[in-house]
Amino acid sequence: MYLAFGENTRSDLIIEAGDRLARVQCKTGRLRGGSVVFRACSSYGHHRNPLTARRDYQGQVDAFAVYCPETAGVYLVPIADLSVHVEAKLRVDPPRNGQRKRIRSAADYEIGRIRVTPTPRDPSGAG
Image (cartoon, rainbow, N blue to C red; front, side, top):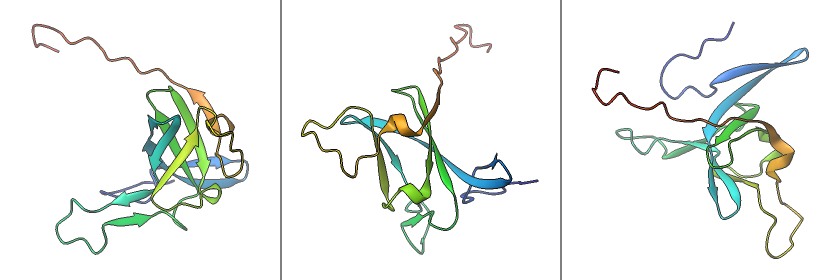
C-alpha cells in the first residue's frame, strides 16, 4: 500500500503497469502557443528560506499525469521522455515552421478526455 503523507511529497499516486508499479506526479497543464505546457519541477520559492527555488523529479517519479482544462485531455508522460527539468511541452497544433524533430505530440501521450463543468452555486448561499 502507498500512502503519500505531507506537503510536497514527490509522487501523488502509484499506478500498476503489468507486474510493475510506477510513481506518478500529477500536474495541471495550460494551452499556450499550440502546446500543453506543464511544470516538470516543484517550486519552493514560497517557503521561508528554501534551500533551492526549484527541484526536478529525476529519479523520484516515473511519469507525469497532466490534465489540461483547455483541451480536456489527460496525458501520461514518462519522465524518461523528457530532457527538460523545469517546463515541458506537448504539442497540440503542428508547428508553423513544419519542424518534426524534438517535438512531443500531445496525441502520443493522451490517455483520456475529461470535461470538468462547475456545479451551479446556490444563490441563497446554502450550498
